[in-house]
Image (cartoon, rainbow, N blue to C red; front, side, top):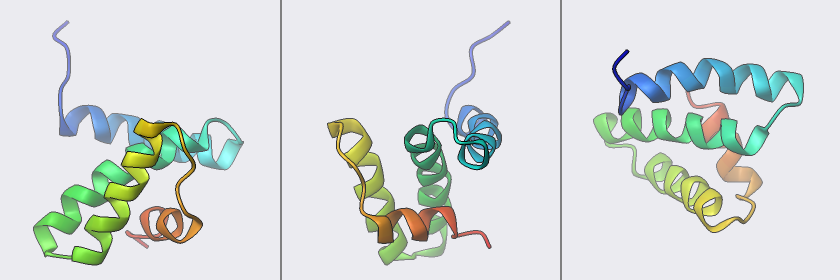
Length: 80
């Protein structure tokens, strides 16, 4: 089986991420997976505010810190 890269991995992980958010699993990882998907869509749409929020959520995960609640709200509610 070939390894998956890029968008395919993020889409696969998003379905797991949503389940984790609802089930009390690992919300930080779920938020980062969602942030990657939102970042891709926001780039396509030219939504600069969402791009910056996604970057802050991703950076927080990479730095081992907690992302701001307003950034998380934007990322997790972006496609609603």
